[in-house]
Image (cartoon, rainbow, N blue to C red; front, side, top):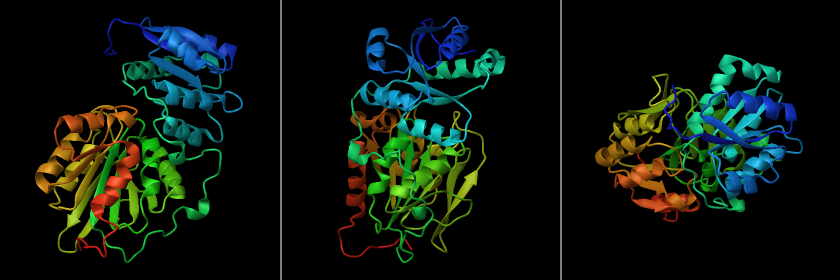
Length: 376
């Protein structure tokens, strides 16, 4: 059973097919707690409909012609952020379309059956309704244009494949600091405002937990790598972390570290341990494992996301390692859950909007000084 209150869950449906609008509306409203308050063919007037109907959730067809679905999603997230569930039939570019939607701020993604009548299948219907229920109640930050255009990646161009997996980092560069980053809803876009601005020769390494399912984390790493000065890749089992490289926890795996004091190496460990409060990867798993290393060069960064994942681990990093903690401020968060928990715990050393996080990282490492001290 779903844990909801007695209020209706108000939904606006955007789909270019009249048949789909009818079938999907009937499917959702088979649950008496869901009410489809309006439908739209292309979402061109979605902000007016949001103001008029005050929905809890919006379901948008990702395959509206001429990029209409993505334009609708972008319009919602820039002007009146709400939980959006995108829908699409399986096709050649399905996985990248899903990743793009999640990058732009979509809460979730539904695979539309090729035969729309299959929406009446109990498993498909139950999954869709469950995602609507989970999306209700998320508190999004209603601030326009959170991310300056200069910090956003254009998605209508191909990734520069020649830059992916090349050896961007300087093999002679030593690690002075380890940055551990945790983020969730809104995180892909927030990371695009941080990682590409990191200087190539900053003597640091970066461990990132972004709540995402398998496949998406690899695509996220590739896209960030294509626009960053440092190398960005999905983490692999047992690899020794290097300076100038960012490692993203693979979807479906917790990412932990193992510190060999004798060699001075920090090695990545991937684990299929049970999800933590439904999350795998979970930021707390990474942060807690770092807290056990005894290292004193740690910086924890917590950014936009629902819930409190990361707070417990950052508390441990602060207590055991005297870690420096940076939290994204409410003004730029899509959802001010994870940073809020850390700020309320009283452990944040810096509280800044997403566009200032990289500057805080640079200032802490001190890249303008002459020469660096390594942990090795």
